[in-house]
Length: 217
Image 1 (cartoon, rainbow, N blue to C red):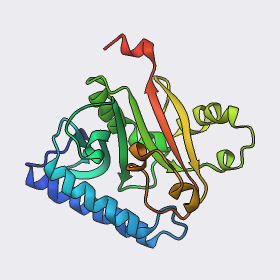
Image 2: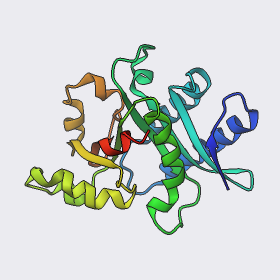
Image 3: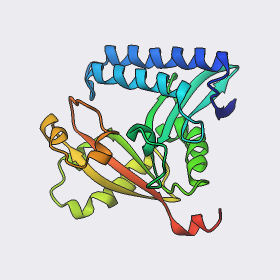
């Protein structure tokens, strides 16, 4: 097993990336209870393929796990200025664009992505980008919550079962229960990383490296 960054100059990397992204889209098309509109995900995949070939590898990375030479997992991540279409670095934020693994029967979600997630996270944090954003399906407990003072505590307990949060603080930035919620989101700087359309509730999360771990870098 090898975990490494994919290289846009490597023909086999590009070929295998296209194959696994097409497999992801096939799964989205066949999904019985989708969260995102299929057309939206086609746009995401098209953008990833195009940006992988054009963006600086310092700003846009795809981490992959290879087993016996076959690409099994991908973790797509990039600085926010990539989606903003600018070259200057104004804010030290990055985004998880897509996580996908070919095999869906592994033991726990954390086991699936931990190794490549750590490689990607460390890459940006080494540059001083300590805060990342991601959009995920909103857990029912969060959607039905009436006391939002407990939202961050809930995410720490529930969401960190997927991505261990020992070194990071997680924060619920926004819950989108409907397309209307999504359309009314007024912060354009972050709207670029949100899906264009949703079929179910999603949540925008941020995760920030705890200060004691920054001192070790």
